[in-house]
Length: 375
Image (cartoon, rainbow, N blue to C red; front, side):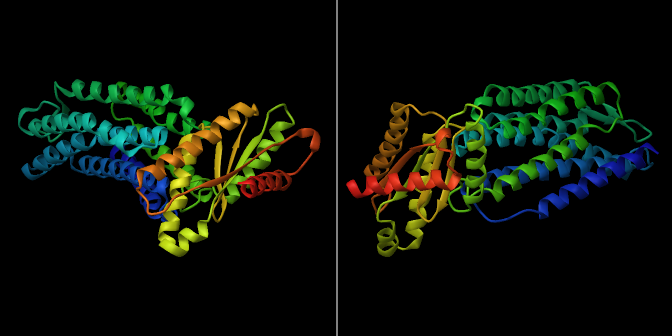
């Protein structure tokens, strides 16, 4: 009865993972493509765990030397794969926090070493019984060194929790909460399952996290410009309306509107692919120049909008200076066959004026073209 219940739960989780694997928008975007790959690695590792564990429960307790060999082999596979979901989650969280592939690649080295050590012990356990062994009745028995694996995994879970908690200021609130829904419930489920052997908690909890993460990825994708990885016009409109409402409760709202000077000339001379690279370069500069809570969106064509909440003229000009300095550094690097220059309009939303979102964008547009004309 226990085996049947477990197989039903695992089967449901596997069906959910298969649906998630084949669902969603497959279009590539600069940032979301890497995030999606890491998420799919999570899917694959958890799906593998569920499949291996299901096979083990089908084999355990049945007679025969062939069954015994199968239990030993699949038990080793179980412990080889067991730590992978935690490792992939840490890499996934690290990328969402820092948005830097080089950063999580460095992190992947110590994680790979830990995984390799545990994998070697799991393989050796077939002969030594370190992590597990099989009794004469072909039942699984925990080995003397299993606490080493358990401690290693709990250390990794705590590391994941600390990674998310210590970098919460780098994350938007929704992403922060989503990331916390993995290590905290997994830690609790693991403790309960360790205390009451046979409970089915960890992998259903992990599958639930996958559903939440998938929902957030698709939500961000629907509001992300497919080329540049910034927010799209739909997201801009929603965010601008939200921030205008916040102004009524005492918040402030300021914005920049930027366009690339002579963008058409870049397309005409170097081709549309070069134009796409120019848009990606500008988007990358903007995203790296602002704070996490600021909003960067591609309004359309070669125009970008940045929304933020500080209004001091000095702070606004410091942001503009950071952007222009980054553009100058890109031009000086000669990585591109073209030079980029930007026209940047500024505007402040004032509650007493009672303007709409379109009025605010019009004010930004007017200031940008006035500055472009003066140049």
